[in-house]
Amino acid sequence: MKNKIFLLFTLLSLAAVITTTSVISIAAYNKNFDAVKKEVAENAKYIAAGAGQNGSEYLASLPKSSTHRVTLISAGGEVLFDSRSNASQMENHRERPEVIAALELGAGEATRRSATLKTTEYYYALRLNNGDVIRLACETRSIGDSFNEFFIIAAAIAIAVLIISALLASKLTKSIIAPINNINLENPEKSKVYDELAPLVLRIKQQHMQIVKQMSRQKRAQTEFSLITSNMREGFLVLGSDGCVLSYNKSALKLLDSKISDASGRTALVLNRNGKFRTLLQNAFLGEKQSEVIRISHREILVTANPVVEDEVKGFVVVLFDITEKQEREKLRREFTANVSHELKTPLTSISGYAELMAAGVARPEDTKEFAERILTEAKNLVALIHDLMLLSKLEEAPPMQMQQVSLLSVCNNVKYRLEQKAAEKELTLSITGEDAELLGIPAVIEEMVFNLCDNAIKYNKQGGSVEVSILKEEACINLCVADTGGGIPAAEKERIFERFYRIDKSRNSTVPGTGLGLAIVKHGAMLHNAKVDVKSDANGSSFIVSFRL
Ligand code: ADP
Image (cartoon, rainbow, N blue to C red; front, side, top):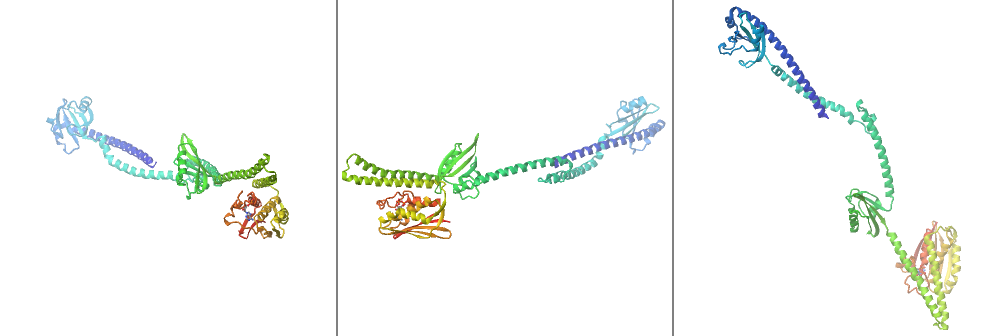
């Protein structure tokens, strides 16, 4: 812009300088030429008068230094005298325009370049009375000479114009640009600008408002998106076509076990060096959706890469799910089904075996009673198993059972009543100590928990031992403890006994009937009541403590 203004100024100024110089040169030339003509005509008259009286003698007496060259030419054109050259050597002048005019009209003039003097001359000729022609010539300047005279001045002016133009262009550019640069883009209407900039300021204001609106809309969308994705348990990554991360959430880094704090702009392959992960991304790059379960830091992660295709692969959306728990649940379910089938099949096989023997009449009459008793025992076991299974599934489904105030002492008394016979058979003392305590719970479930603990305390006790149920109310909880004098539980088994169908050393327990579900029922019952179960055990006996939080 600055250069354009400078060029414009310079061209305009130079055009002005050249035009002015030309006009002045022409005017000066014309003025000078008129003066020369007048002077020559005056002089010619005097010299003609002198020459008319004394002829060539008069002419010879004229001072040689005169600026005018004087020539006397006969009517035939022969040069009779010339104040600057030898007349006899000069050619005939009859055809000179000024001579022709003088002979015809009495006076004539012409301007041309002199072949003799090699200068531009003004000629003025006058016809004498005797028919001869007296001619005066005076060197005159051409327009070019006149222009040359002004050239140095014009050049000086032109240089001055160039400098002034440069300065003016710079200043003018600054004065045009500065207000534009100083426009406050946040509040354009508050900027001080010249009138011509008002439409621009208005446009900037409108655009600024539009940008602010779009930015806030985009920010809101971005915040919503970040809020949603940051609270997602699932991980997600948006990758560009070059495999670099455009967007991600924290769960993605966590699931990929990446130590990188900021993944933006980094290639996804640095997030995890797992070969399967690399292959999955490479295959997705070919445009096919990929899905694979990848084991990362002892967890099973389902990684799905969806290519974003628009004519070509523009990027990927990678979603990561932690399916470890789901898979574990699946495994447990499979194990549970296998266990249930096995536990149901064992008594049924035995029942059908004895029944078959009896039906076929193979059993001896004296064995029939024993077979029938075995069938009865197995059937009771089956009923107990089905009862426990149904109870457990009820607890696991955690239906919204009605909670109510439960008296622990009356629950314990109920259980004592139900198990007294069983305890007596083993000559056990079954006692309840402590004060009554009430808690909010489901009476049937709490009774089932106490029953199972007491039943185990009897089953795994020694002959003539004791079972003590105590209730201890503390500040923040109520502890229910069932202690026995049995052989105890090995430390390594303390966790596992709460698993479904788990029984310690089945061969050792083979004489003790059980489903392996009693403690699983206790655990789930405790979970329903937000309580925790602890086991203390040694060779002298075991204590199961259920802590109900108040
Ligand atoms: P079961 O029907 O076999 O009693 P449980 O789930 O109630 O099933 O108990 C799991 C296992 O824990 C039992 O088989 C037994 O080996 C052990 N156990 C439970 N309670 C006691 C206890 N009081 N003393 C010793 N061992 C016990």
